[in-house]
Length: 477
Image 1 (tube, rainbow, N blue to C red):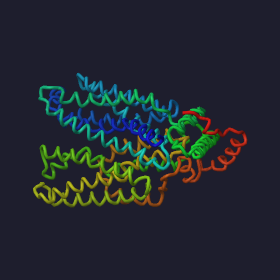
Image 2: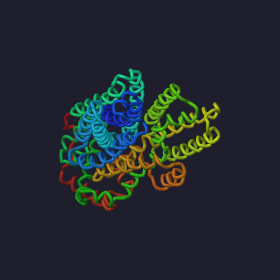
Image 3: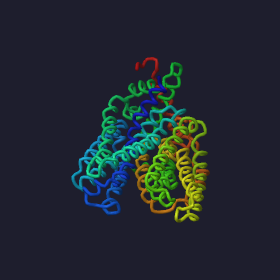
C-alpha cells in the first residue's frame, strides 16, 4: 500500500503545481479575447496588459519568500492550503472583475498563491517520498505544471470560440482555476503532515505512524525504524546547535547556493521565453492563424509527455548530474541551430527551414523536460538540510525561479548556459539519487555549518541509551 498511497498523495498535492502551470498560461488566451480588450478599453500592447503580466510574477516571488516563514511555523500541509485558498480568491476576483483594478488585484493574489504553492509542494513531496522514488514523486510537480499549461491552452482556445459580445471568452478561463484550487484546499485536510515536520514539532508517535503508512510494504519494518531514528537524531542535533531565523541559511551557503543555482540554471535555458513568445516565433517562421495555434497546442503536450517518461523510467535510475549536463549541452546546441536556421529564413518563406525551426523548438522542450524541468524541483528540495529547508526552498524559488525568470526573458541565455551551467554542475553538483534526505546532508560535508557529524554520533548514543527508540510493531495505522 505504501507506494500507491505515497504516489496518490504526491499527485494530489501537485494540484498546486497544476495551478502554477494553468495560471502562468491562461492570460495568453485571455488577452486574445476581443471582448476582454473592449470591456476594459485596452489593447494587447498597452502598458496595463504589461502590468497584468508582471504583477503575477512579482506576486509569485513575494509569495514564495513569505511561505518560507509559514512552512516551518504552521507546517507543509497548512501552507499548501493557504496557497490553495489564495488561488481560489484570486480566481474569483479575476473572473468577476468589473474594472482593471480588480484584475490587477486578482493577478497579484493569484501570483502570491502560485509562489506559495511552487515552493511548498516540492518540500512536502520530498519529505514524504521514499529515497528510491523521490525523483518520481517530486518530479510530479513539473508534470502537473505541464498539464496546467495544456489545460489552460485548450480551455482558452475553446472559450475564444464564443461570440465577441460574450464575456465567456475570458471569464470562464479565469474562473475555471477556482475549482482545482478549492479542491486542493479541502482535500489537504485528509492528507497527513510531513513526518519530518511532525518530528520537528515533537509529535513523534504521529510521525512514526505516518512513516509506516507512507512506506510500509509488509517486510521493511526495520528500515522504517531506522529511517525514523535517523530523522529524529538529525533534527535534534541540528536544533541543538543552529539558531532560528534566516541568517543560518546564509551561513550554510553550500546547500543554499546549489538549491538556488539549479533553479537559476533552469531559467537560463530560455524555456519560459519560448513558452511565452512561441506564437511570435511561429509567425516569424511563416506559421500563422490556426496553424500556429495547433503547433502551440502540440508543443505544450510534447514536454509533459517527455517529462512523464523521464521521471517514471529514468530519473531515479541514472540520477541528477548526468541529465543536467546532457540537458544543458543539448539545449544550447538546439538553440544555436534554431538561431542559425532563422538567420537564413528571416521572412519565413523557406518551408524546409521553417520546419527545422519548429523541430528545434520542440527539441528544447523535450530536452528541458528530461533534465532541468523535473530535476530543478527535485534537487532543490533534496539538498537543503531540515533546519533551513523551508526558508532555503523559499529563497531558491522566489529568487532563483521567479525573479531570475523575469530577468532572463530580457536577455539571451545561450552563451551563459555553456560558460556557467555545465562546468558548475560538472565540478560542484553531487549525485543524490536514492539517498535519504539525511544522507544527502552528510554527502555535502556534514550538517549545519559543517560541524554536526560528531554531534550526531553522540546524540545517537544518548538517544539509544535513554531508550527512546520506538518499535514500529507497536504503532497502529
